[in-house]
Amino acid sequence: MKDKRRHGNAALRAATLGLLGAAVVPAPASALETPGEQLAKKWEFDTGLLVYSESGGRVQAAEPVLKATRNFGDDRMLSFKLVLDTLTGASPNGATPASTPQTFTGPSGSGSYRANAGEMPLDDSFKDTRVSLSADYLFPVGENGKFGYGLTASKEFDFLSAGANARYSHDFNQGNTTLSAGLSYEADEISAVGGAPVPLALMPAAVSGEVENENEDEDEGGGPGAETKGVVDVIVGLTQVLDPNSLVQFNYSLSTSSGYHTDPYKVLSVVGADGEPLRYVYESRPDARTKHAVFARYKRYLFARDVFDLSYRYMTDDWKVQSSTIDSLYRWNFNSTNYVEPHLRWYQQSAADFYHAALYDGEETRVTEASADPRLGAFSGYTVGLKYGHTMQSGNSWSARLEYYQQTGKREGVPEEAAAGLSKFKLEPDLSAVMFTVGYRFKW
Amino acid sequence: MTRIALIVVALLALGGCADIGAKPWQRGVLAREDMQVDPDPVQTGLDDHIYFSKEASSGGRGFGGGGCGCN
Image (tube, rainbow over all chains, first blue to last red):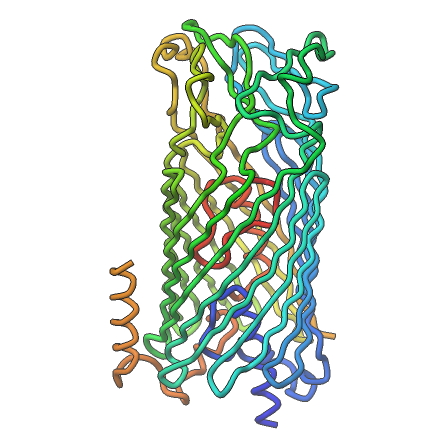
């Protein structure tokens, strides 16, 4: 019986390794089922549904997840994960507000969308469904090692991605120290609606909802061919048990990508000294990016009841984005089958060096890279949330989490010549979103 | 990088000490599901996807996002 319990434990321990979290200790089998019952049910299903809703008619998303893990009982685990993602709503297109209504060409080149005077232009033609599938296999190597490899694929209307990864972790010091390393490769294909526009080329004017097509060939550019991008990720990690109640984790990750990084649907306003738009040009991003991130986590069991989790991440890249993320969770296990978990997250990033809120008249011919995508601007953000979880008599469990996410932009990248003219507009779109997640975990 | 290497070496050295870590018979708490580094990987995946598509950062706690045309 003892052995069987150990195998049940291994399932959960291995599950955590999937993220290269590399837990060094076995997790318990459910306290409410006998080891025999645990073993009889070899599939564990972990399901979730996220509903994400931005205020102001912006992005709305629903994302169901199904993850099935087969435990072979000897530290071998096979898992499959399916994620669906349906998105609708509007996103800032990068253009600045203006004193008169603005009309933009839709991504397909045939439609158009509008922004009222003084309003942040939002592209409301955004609608997509994403399907993502992954498979993963994990197995022991020798007494203290574990090897895992996985395949992933995802498809959107204008995007296709396929990837593979491999991870290894090794326990030392009676399982108190775990070193882990992982490598992943991903190949992406971007088929922009209407073809990828020529970077910094003029967006064809849209008049009364119709697009002027006369310059289509020269200005809109973009052939039917797809653009590609390759991403290589490397991660190394260390998990150390400090004492019977606490542990720390350190990771370093390196991500290098090359190929098409531009968002084909984003533009920049080219403005005059009065801050009013003269025309719009498509954005242009570098064709490579290297990101470094260090991550540290401290986890402690408190009052013989609760769990406190604090983590910090620092990221820097060669686009000159630097960011800090602090994340904290406090899980209050107010009895053996119920918990409440408050969550606080704080985030801050600096702008990419080619971020411009707008370009001044003629500047578009002097720069080679420019983007007004607010995600590449400077901003800070916080998330506050609360989760409730319950474990049922059967050992199955469910949870519900409600969170609020707020981003506050920082004014940056304003062309000096037009600074006075643009001062009447809010250039950095704020973002607020409500996120609701339900999860249900059961064995079969 | 040097700093990270030093931290790793220091922790490995500490791990070898008798007073750091837990003995095999002291692992009750560490074995709890809620003491695992990622007790809810499905939730973590959803979170990573949101922040990857709304912020310019990724990576750190796992492979750096991706598989998404959202950024």
